Length: 584
Image (cartoon, rainbow, N blue to C red; front, side):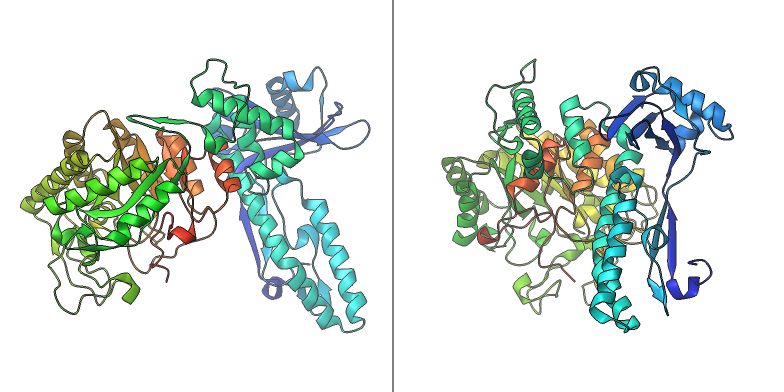
């Protein structure tokens, strides 16, 4: 029916980038069971669950690359059965796989703009599908049927009204379920990333993959498991060989050891509101940082601190390019330490986003008077109303490297515990990294290796000026959220290069390379990027993204998706991962 009336229903059918084959087995599993097998070809996983009193369903899945490397394309069902029986012999325990006349398929995600046309209505798999890894097909179809019947009970013969209510009631529920199913499918597409995890963390990561189960939810379902997780996590954090602790706090209260920095917990806080005169932090900015330290987090993260007068975003941006500024920052650091926390400074240069009014007056609005010249990777203004920056010359780049190094030396003298070089949010260094703002035709433009050159040179200069015994990190933009912009694959490449140069922590941020980007802001929106960068680049990550509860932080940290999380605390003026004023 859906294909016959495609114009009315507006179907979208998206194949997922994995392959699966569907069997039965005469082994009866007592619960939904996952099995993983890492082979020379890649990772295979089995999804098995009881079907009736004598048989179970047994689905084998892998990503496209693994399927091709294993030579499974074109095999008969008998050959596929033999291959999968050998692969999962330990789990099958001598039992056999049963034919279901199945071949390797790609799962099809089905969505429809409209669920009815006249008196013809779709429900179940005809109108929506959700990946089998969350076991939802029959449940969703039954709930559709109940909702449809209830709508007719309420509206009687008013067919249009009943069908409209049916769609309005079910569509939002199904969309949320499909998004959770997509997250679950992405997990299995990339599960090889977690092959090196300890079994306890691997299991927790698996259970929380779709976002529908969290740390607290799992604690209610299986308190013994969460106690074991806490025990392993705390023991691992303390360096115990067994990885176990007799009495253990939740993951966010476990100690964190980074290269050059030890923190008592995994909570960071990051007040961002600018409060400075001539680059000197004012009392309000000082107090916000100290209040954040008193809230109990292990690390306080400054906003962007300019390395030069022309590197300020607004006249209110603090700096570290003069002695008076260093003196004020020394007082901030001392008071944060007295409050019981450690503090990290983010050094940056506004580039083409500079010389604008304080953000309470508007977003990226050029100063009416008192502005300063701007520079960037290319002579492209940030907005149509922005000042056109000059394209940086070799002399400009040499001066920029020196400015970052000098500011880093000042930060060290102030007593900062850690330093992050800011490489995101459309500022100067990000303008080199993003192909949207870098149109250079020399050795600093074009392919990613060239676009990374100047930011990496700056990082190297900071590394040479910063004490080796203290943590050095970077704030990295995971995506430009714009067509033809930089994406998470490039962010992973950059994070690897930084890690090789001594970067011990990547603070994951996103967007703002260009004002017309299409961000996807929601709770935890940065966590998938952090997960990818942490796993693929092998570097510790700090992540925010509108996380406001201990449950959210415990889920992210416990599952190994980040090492440190920013707690969004509105009463302290704290925000995470994106500058809150830039929400178009």
